[in-house]
Image: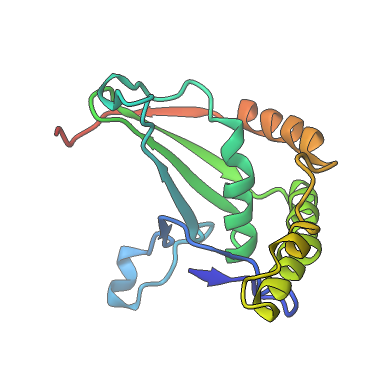
Amino acid sequence: VRLHREEGKTWLGAAPDGIILPQTDSAAGDAGVATPGSSSSLLEIKCPYNRGFPRDMKPWQTAPWYYMAQVQSLMEIFDMDSCHFYCWTIEHGSCLYMVERDREYWQYVYCALEEFWHKNLVPAREILLDSGGMDVAAALEYKPREIHMLTEYTKILSQRMANSLEVKPMPNNLKM
C-alpha cells in the first residue's frame, strides 16, 4: 500500500497486485543494470467471477471500462507510466492489456475523489467522532449526491480508454 506522494494528498492510497521491475542487462551480472528503455510497471489482476460460475468465464475481448479509474489511480499514486492489466480465468486462458498513464483523465477522477473526501467523508466522520457516533442525522447532512457531476463524462472517457486497449490473449499454464 502506498499513499500519494504529494503533501495534502496523502489521504489517497492504493495497493496494486504487483510491481514489475525493469528488465536488467544480463551482461551486467549481479549489478542489475536496467536495460535501456525499460522501466517499472504496475500489475493489476482481475479474476472474473461470472455471477457464480467462474469456470465458464472467458477472457474479456475488451477491457471493462469500470476498472480504468482504478488503474489510472494506481499509476498516479505510484508515479508510474504503465500498468499490466491482466485478466485470469480458470479454464479459458487469460489476456493482458497494457494501460498507459493519462494525466488529463486523472484530473477528472481526482476532482470527484477530492470532493467526496473533503466535502462528504471528513465532515461526516468528524461529527460522528465528536458525538460518540450518536449524531447520525447531522452526519447524514454530508451524504454525497447519488451521482457526481463528472460521473457521465468520466464514464465516457473510461469507455474510450478501455476500447482503445489492445488485447493480448495468453494461455493458462496452471490448471485447477
